[in-house]
Length: 281
Image (cartoon, rainbow, N blue to C red; front, top):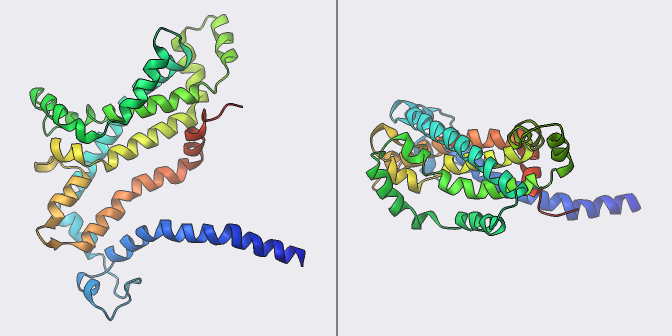
């Protein structure tokens, strides 16, 4: 009897909320998937169940690859996201380690200032950045976004890595210095291998932000074959009052795959990297 009451309470307190949250979280992906697999006419037929696929088709995916430049959008988005993430990680590692371990005048103020820079909304920055991009002749090139995205990625990633670096015992670094290692050797050989969860967390965050970013991509790479996925989908698949719902959902499903794969494989490291340094034991 007691075991049954315990199981019932556990179901009520844990499993039901989790089930509700799971349905709430996954329903948008389910909806995108079933709409992308339906013929366009079925989307407006009231006799069909809207939550299921009555007539399966891949026509929406075929249209996406044959009638749009979706593969080119994927390539552009991937190049920009990967290169921007690498640049941001390299800069954030150096900044985060310097603020976590080195003591110099204004280091605390600089650390807070870097984090506050992340809070500046992109809508306030895109006009001056647009002028810089035009003067440098980088408009409608990969470098327009590769050099712009780190302005948003570096502040947060630096703050995240700074907190993670502080969780590494100083004694390890002091022992390495006693053996003759320089600061750079300590960073490369000791600190970075111990900071894999933090690096993965900062990398996933940076890649996700680049992959989904719309405002800068719309302004700096919105013409010809240089569009990214968010810009290409909006500009080429939404024409006046005509919406290609099936292909729109197909592009959303395919565009979600890289991010879903990243989170699926590295979710444990991602969570530990975000929470490291949040409390002191």
